[in-house]
Length: 269
Image (cartoon, rainbow, N blue to C red; front, side, top):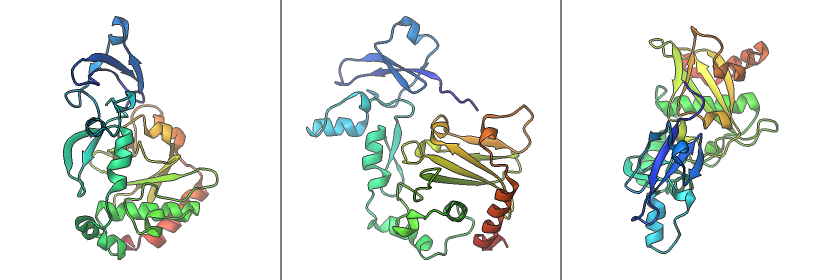
């Protein structure tokens, strides 16, 4: 896994007629690049103009203007989804993704209510991703003494998972069961978290049978937004990897975590 992003070149057309190159180097835009800037870049394309589809739509309706924030590039390009989570084929900038996509969905929508009903009633499928994610959030609440805002607001698309911790700030939770075939804990889709409001991500590595929390990591947001995947090897063959400096090794904390885990994870005990 690489920590730094590749260097990209993107052909952008703000007016839909005239085009110009921009270079994206580790998330920073280089406008009007020279030949040297373009060297070693990879071509990236999202749509015909590489401009946010929502911004373009708003411009046509005289509601907004196309700006540099409308340009689609890694860290500023998100797949739009409809109210039931299906991809629409359109691409959004971070601003429009935050304002118009997941966080603005109507909670009264029948499909969403149906999908969330078991979670709200406290009876989700214990093997589902949602149920496992809920356990991780409950573990964070118990360990760090913060509140679960999804439950408090009865809204499982709430943009913030937990109330603020006095030291660690706003926490985001991820937990992953051990993959014995690939001998690792691996989580993808981190780009969905890039635009969320949090300071640190608590990452729990759970045993294959779900009974033990084997490891805990606390990743600052600046590390999370560098990557789309976290892959933690159980027995790495090469040196110390990037994530090890964020590992919690205090044995008292590990014991406390597993005590809380046993109390909340009744399905596996």
